[in-house]
View (cartoon, rainbow, N blue to C red):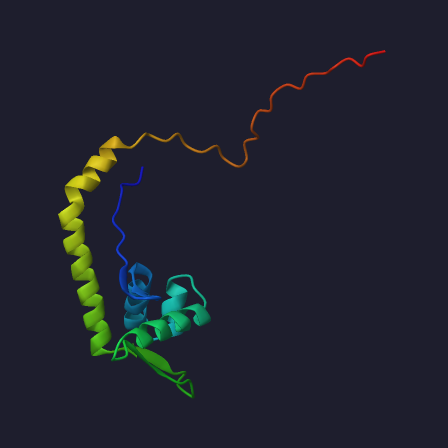
Length: 137
């Protein structure tokens, strides 16, 4: 059974937020040097990754990611010093929030009902027997 976990999303204003998905994307771009490869590593399309990067960059005064157009070398992207700082601050806030709520999460874990395993798809569920009604004559 999976333990309860805290997921943190920071609201920056109307329609503007930063959360675990955007931070994971920044980390993937940092590690791969590419928006495309970063998105692929997270199972998202290039378009979705690019839109999220654009959203992040529009939220702040400084860009978090700088992209270089493709060409003979195929382009790429780099997480800026501000983007690295954004990742660090988010992860620090997340760690502090988790530490502050750990005992309450453990309490929730202890209170959870044990779930039975879901039936496999290959097993057909048993159907109740049909009642056959005699026709009135």
